[in-house]
Length: 290
Ligand code: G1P
Image (cartoon, rainbow, N blue to C red; front, side, top):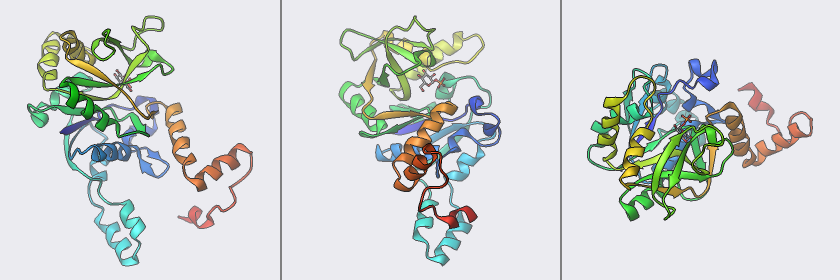
């Protein structure tokens, strides 16, 4: 199966940082956010990955390329750990630019020559996944059992109004509708769509039909999902594990803290900060010189 990462968005919640640095390259301590997505896809058995990008996102292309000069330096130093740290992420990468910000539905339509007549995975890289089987793998398992398009779903997070909220059939599996960012109090359920989707190729004609009637503004993926859902062709997969939402400054900060808390040295720094002290004992003074 192939995957499409929709990474064309401006990242306007992170301006001015995102003016020149793609938000997908923002570091979670020392790893760019996109690395977590690429690892998830690789662990899910996906090799071919299309990144839909835009102007100012060239760093993403460099990230999946070799850094020959540094490789030579680290090799001559015999520094295997540093060599590993700049290794090219696993996968074969393809790039397409979305030239106008016409929305996620439009971005998906651009992927058709890449995915052809096969089912494929779509990733919105603002959502990272930790714990449990890789989220993309979970979607593939559900597709294998149902043959339907699959939405990854989380139950009852805060701020439902920021998400696509799904309505479910009585079987608790099939999606009957999805509403993008419903005003508080109007949500059809407490189940939100998170940034992983497995689409059958039926999504293309569904999106195209809606696109032909679309009159201005962003064209959202939900337009196509609604149409497929009406025919009973969309199911959910309740996410096992947890989502880290790096799409807002607050969520990004929490994600960094959570990642750091799992590393004993960095966890000690967080503790020292909380206690109002200076550096944690054991701080490597050489690090500040690099
Ligand atoms: C997008 C989708 C929304 C989904 C969310 C998941 O919203 O449009 O349906 O629930 O991702 O993170 P955005 O984060 O672009 O506002």
